[in-house]
Image (cartoon, rainbow, N blue to C red; front, top):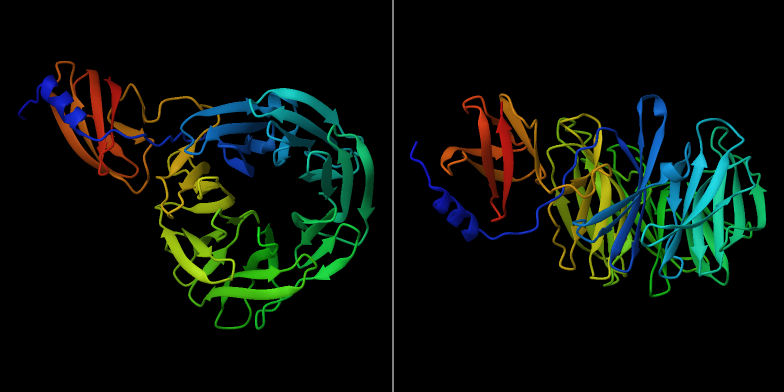
Length: 463
């Protein structure tokens, strides 16, 4: 092979367009993701990892910019040992939010606690709740003065607990609605001091009045996923349409209602040859433009060998479908949450199959105002500030893997020895596996260049 001098090598490097790389840190444990909150230009999310046997639990609060290029992490399990994070509130003012922690391994008594944390990830104060007969799992902040907490006995699946607290976490009033097994899906403020509580098949105002959810003609009962308040004064109830009859027709719906629950209009989007799954009941948001973003995972029931993909539907406030973007991956993927950003776009959070370590990783996508998505980012809270790309094992024996790139990318790898000579060139696709058994022992530099003009340098030691 003709050798390339070190000078020529760096000239090649400098001629490429340098750009911010993705951050991908594969997780040894599966993530259980909960909430995604935007405060200013910072994103906050909570996640939990379970060891084998579901114990002990590790809960984290993660802070990052919109691109997740710079992150800080707070280990919540270190503050509240034995408890797991269940919910993070919207911002209280512009500097504070509450994080709900609970001990859930056994039946009652439960230990419910509110941690009040500022946007620098500093603990301001904490409040241990007196109610121990219910598992409090959801919270809603109203203005800067009230916190509503919602829960039930998770092991008995009975009743619905609602507690009204002040901003310091002191109980004002609480009650248990004893009307059988309820599954809480969504809480939305509708004005005049009222909260609209969404259950699986109906909705209930906080004063106990029940509103039956309007169904879409021809589709029977609908499953509520989220209620999206809009700046036009309407509410958009989104969810999944279960299969009815044959051929099997499954899809998602949007009901446009007023604050009293009266149906204004509806939209049903279905498909005969597929099965769309709204996982975790936390999808959907209203963009700054007023359009609804509805992300969901798509499965094929007729072609089970096809890998599921993500679809992102854009629906305007008049319930007109504007466009659908499909994002294909080479591994299994789910949607967990989405939130609109102040730049007109949105961020989407979910789980994706870890084909290297097994189980699942956390992924993060940033959507700009034009509907373009950033490359897939996968990260691990255990190493939030590490480099953007990595290789393993290092030192290497016969093979290495390069981590930190979009699983749809194709890359060129130039391997140079300590003299600057290029001793190997490889073109790799996911999972970016490169054989190294033809290299002699020593220290090497790897120039990694993708097809979009991004380039990165890694160091490798060959045994």
